[in-house]
Structure formats: structure tokens, C-alpha cells
Length: 249
Ligand SMILES: [Mg+2]
Image (cartoon, rainbow, N blue to C red; front, side, top):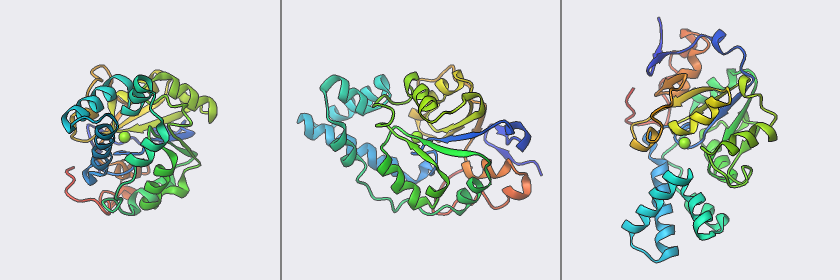
């Protein structure tokens, strides 16, 4: 049985035999967007801006989305335009209820089979990433978290963030693969020679601003895609992601 994942067939193991470093985005990549976990973060970003600038929710939303488009993250815009202190912002926006996500045995098993080291590359902060990965039951697979502070506050998709990652963690981009739900964040990785996997979802912002980016692979189901690297038998059952509800294939 040929397992087809997303727009392209899952690769055989041989296709990625050169990969030494597996790099994963966190939000909406390591857990499914159907959990709506990031909606909580987005809501709290809006709340924070509304309070900080004493504006209504509509104006806060306009600022939030405008900065996200222009600066990669809302926080980057707030820091550059308003000299905002990132620490209390990050603490506030990530103080969310993690119960919509649950342990994913399928993802845990798939990660366990990957040869080489695994890193997280997130525009969020490491304490939040650790909480999310603990909840998913996968934290032990990752040797490093490259977060927004480690990136010297320059987020994806700015090229400096990728160059700094490669330098700090001694990553050969031509022997690395990057998994990410926001398409525009894959472009700088591809430009540096990384293989790219778009873990897509149905939100408009996941694909906006990236008309010229063609990822090497596309999937709607990360655990199944990873499991398929090791053949159809290994992939069987990997698609039933625990804690996931209402996700379409
Ligand atoms: Mg993401």
C-alpha cells in the first residue's frame, strides 16, 4: 500500500538518508492546529496590546496582524516600534490552558525512529516550548530549543534567525530538514539548502505572503508523514493522533 500524505507521496527512507538534523517549528507543527491552542495565544496577544496601548479590541487586532505581517511576529513589531520589553509579553501571551492538546503516542514513536538530532526552532520562548512538549510527551527527543531569545529576538522568517541557528548549533543546512506550518517561514530554510516540509492547515495566514515558496513536501499529518519514512507497515495506525479531534485528512 502506498501511503499518500498531503499533496505528495511520503518519501522513502532513502530520500532523506543525508539528513543529520531534524528541525521542527513548535506551534501548529508539533501539535495539530485543530486543537486551537494558538488561538488562545493570539487572543492574549490582542488583550496585551489593548491594555498596553489603551485601545479597543479592533485596533489591537489591527496592530497585531499588521506587525505579524511586517515583522514576522507581533512581538518584533512591538519591540522595534514601541521598545516593548519582551519578557512580560511572552509570559502573558503563553499563560494558556494546554488541555486541548494531549500526549501523542504516534508522534513520540515516529520521533524515536528518526536518526540524528532533533531541534525545535520557535518564535515563542523556551519555557513555553518545554511545557507544550511535556504535554505531548516528546520533550526527551529534543536536544535543543532555539527560541526567540536565543535568536536575539529576530524571528522567522528573517534570514538572520536561520543563520544564527546554524552557527549556534553547528547545523549543516544541506543535511537538515525543517518542518513548519507557516509557509513563508520555510523559504529562508530552502534558500540555505534545507529540505522543507509544510505541515499545513486550513488557516489563511499559514500560506499568506509566500506565493513563490514551493516546499519539498506537504503533509496534513506530521506523525503519519514521519512514520511513512519507514514504510507503510510503520505508518499503520500512526494517523490516529491522540488528543486530536475533528481534524480532516
Ligand atoms: Mg507554527
